Length: 211
Image 1 (spheres, rainbow, N blue to C red):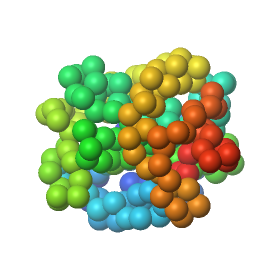
Image 2 (cartoon, rainbow, N blue to C red):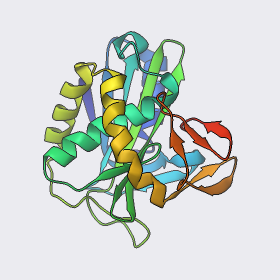
Image 3 (cartoon, one colour):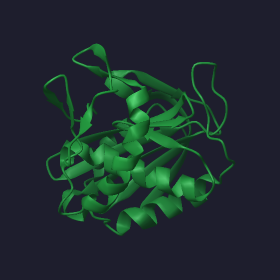
Image 4 (cartoon, rainbow, N blue to C red):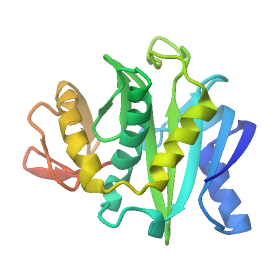
């Protein structure tokens, strides 16, 4: 994975897409920045990031993904792998379905994935330092370059979706204490059933990752 490091950018995801549009796709590429002024959050919300937090976006060819990965659940796949890297370092981080990072009851980050023809883009934001009272932060100190290197080593292994899902299925119990936004409405996940493709069955409706 080639990594381009920037000091400041409006959005690593937007920058990456513009870079690919201009230069073409020449292999896996990651854009990371110290400061992000207009990152893309869930449901189109902006995620403004301060220096010291982790912001990065990367692009892969669909051929570089596990053959059994449901593209609708790619965000679950990529967030779980990062969660696992951080947990191995001692963090108590967990995931709320489908792709939000939490410490206890505080959201500390999330991910968004999109596809364009034969490419998949993933953007991730994670609070490593305190932002404001509405959000939490990671509970351990980490080196950003070390985390990225470990993360992309695992991505390159093309770990099967089946293996990641079996672990996320256990993790999903945390989600039952929260709500998710479905069709613009907050819905409790207490009675949600997790399907093998990463979608959930809730109120007689099958719902995939919303981003």
